[in-house]
Image (cartoon, rainbow, N blue to C red; front, top):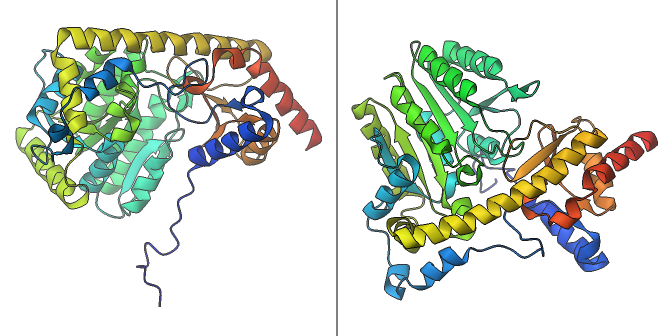
Amino acid sequence: MPFLNQRSDGKKMIDKVFKAAVRAHEAKLRDGAEHVVDATLGTLFDDTGQFIAYDSVWDEFDQIDHITKARYAASIQGNPSYQNAVRQWLFADEAMPASIIATPGGAGAVAATIKNVLDPGSTLVKPSLGWGPYKTMAIEAGMQLRDYNMFQADHFDLDDFFAVCTDVMTQEGKVLAILNDPCHNPSGYTLDTSEWDDLIDGINELAEQGPVVLLHDIAYVDYNNDPHWKRNLLRYRDLHPNAMVVIAFSLSKTLTAYGMRVGAAVAITSDDNERQRFTDAMIYSARSIWSTVNNAAMELFARITSDEHRERRFLAEKQAHIAMIQQRAAIFVTEAERVGLDLYPYREGFFATIRVDERIKESLNEWLAAHNIFLVEVAGGLRVALCSVPKTKLFGLAERIQFLISQYKKDS
């Protein structure tokens, strides 16, 4: 008789990102770091290969007293100062019918939303090309999955997004769908203005049929190229009363605070009663799963964003690294286009992804790894973490990969 219940028996986590990163590290030790292209981890590294932790962030962390670092948070929902900081960071001084619940990273916001919105056996709608843990979280909560096609030519496939959502609505009477924008992981796509217009119109039309919840993952929001992008979030004030958006916000990327595990679920709906019911359920889940999040990290974000000098210093440092990513992307994407390396549509952000047939993806990735190019397998392709590859190693990389792909196909 197994100790595990039937649903948990046989579960085994193999994280392809960390597995690839371990293999890349072993190759560096064996062959020398200068001979290895490690494009695995979705964290910032500088052009010397050094992990980046912002001085403007961690100098401030050092100023927080030990007692504050050691204490529990002020509430399960999150410190009031942190909730205010998140609201201001996302919406500035604009009024927004939103509730903010602190979570352990953006991942906590995604997982808890899935758990509280859908009944076991219901369907989560997710992008065909997307962050792997969406699937893991859905399975963990006992949900089914439906994928919408991510791209039609070089644009977001809104037609398929709404076709899938409409089908789920017809069958189940409710829809929970995930959108990752801007700087989509793993393609680097960002919706344009017309796509945003059509998205809001479509959600409102669908909401005429039943409850619609859009789970909007904005993990990379602070690394897009448009300093005014967050104005798009104000469009959510125009939602149908039968629609809600839950923004999954993460300090991991924003502050280079990956290990601090702090984020927020930001629930937006004009229905005050439903928003409060969702907030109550999320607080209940928080207490039953993670209790409270890191007090010092919440205090850190509030300190930085509430002081003009601290915030200006942080923004300047962050902007320098956005420029670094832009330079890297310009090299890789331009050269990929020149040599015919097939990428999904890229606009900005940490990642670009090579379009690869699923039937050969794993073996092709092994072939590239044998030549000391380490990428990450994702649905429909191989992800290149531009955020972690020094600029010097990106020159000629697309051409090298394209050559190795042609060699692989010739030898297969």
